Length: 159
Image 1 (cartoon, rainbow, N blue to C red):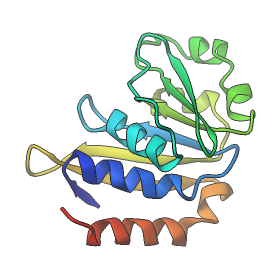
Image 2: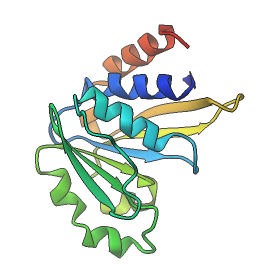
Image 3: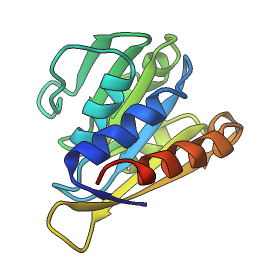
């Protein structure tokens, strides 16, 4: 889908968060400036998190409490896969919250085989973004119809 502004990207993410379950993992993929952090902000809003959400580029991990705990991870600054393994991502993912990893495609080998890939790209206009949701494994595949429904509802929303 194409979002027409940062607020529509956040609205889509909030709708996806409504489907989130304990133990879920989302892998955010996209170039600099494509909206990974905006997606994380909307996702947090959808989990009823009131704190400001910023990219954890320098701290690597920030956790927020809402309907579920959200672990927001940014692996942009990691040079090697071993550094991701040192973060103990599997334990973070298994703690009953939801984990969202910006630049997650760089550490997929260190992740469990069940996640939702959120691929963001530039759109035709400056504030447009392409957003593709791809379930990997069974956890999110079981919710694929509901994912399509939230994408359709977001498309119908104000642009």
